[in-house]
Each structure stands twice: as C-alpha cells, then as structure tokens.
Image (cartoon, rainbow, N blue to C red; front, side):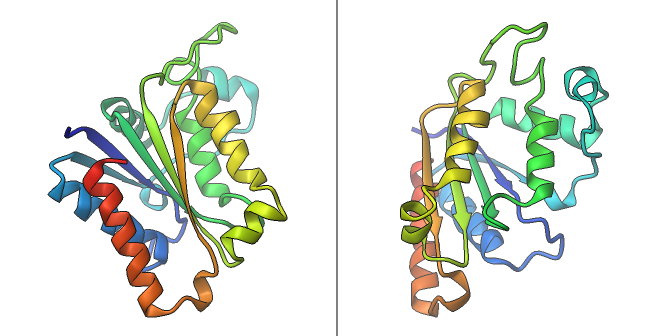
Length: 192
C-alpha cells in the first residue's frame, strides 16, 4: 500500500556527494517505483538557529525552514532519518534540527503534558560509520542509536522504529556499496 514518506537527510555537508546522499537517493528512487509520495528534507540546506534555552525550546519562534520541515513530517506516515556517525553520535547540525522540529506543540504536549503528537508514524534510522556496524552494536551497545530511538522518536510516539547501519564506509568496495544502494532502493519500494 502506497504511503506518504519523508526522507530527512542529515549529513551536514551542503555540497552533497556523500554515502548518506546516495542512500537517500536510492531510497527515493525505490519509493517512486513503489508508488509512494515522497518529500525530502536536506538539513544542511536549511536556515535555523540552535536552541540555547528551555524557554526557546518551549515557546520560541519557529524558523520558516523548520516550519516547512514540520509540515512535511506531519504529512508523512513514515520517516527516514539518515546521518553519518560523528564522534559516536549524530552530527551537531542534525541534533539541532531535531531539537527545533520536535518541540512542544508539534511533537510533544504543552504545559508539561506527555502527549505523543507523532503517534501513528513509523521510522527507519539509517546510520553510516567508519567502524564496523557489528562492533558499534557489540562494543558500544549502539548507545547513540538507542538514545535517538527511545529518547527522541519513541518519546513523541513514533513506532515502530527500524534501523539500517552501514559500517566500514571508508574501506567499502564498489560491489558492497552497490549492494547497500540496492537494499535502500528495495526498502524505498516497500515504504519501510
């Protein structure tokens, strides 16, 4: 069944050309052949400030680019979040984007209410990293991934949340990279 999907590409380099961009492109191509409607958010192309206080988070002005991103997220049934792992977690720009987007009144209730305003949406997190993905899961316990799943996406009601981890990206062969792109295209076709 076709569904509205939003791809949130969180690599902070506005020049593009990275594996995250290629994976997002492959997913988008698959979604198009699968009949899904797709919107794309390129975080590096957006203009927004970082939040510096609880007051800004709770009631500060929402930048126009963030409002457009929130509108796209609201229209979607399924979110794809792609980013490279930097220093063991997501890049700062991507975290700042999530802080801006998932604010009270949009993703959370206001006045201390625990309303999960994004319930009914599902997500897939796609992370690229230099270390082997198995090592990240085994040795580090996938701590930053679990934090995103539980403390951000799950906290606002998004479920189920699936993940795709691509490790050893600096040394990957062209054949393995092509396999990863095919996998993302297949997930896009299914809208997963």
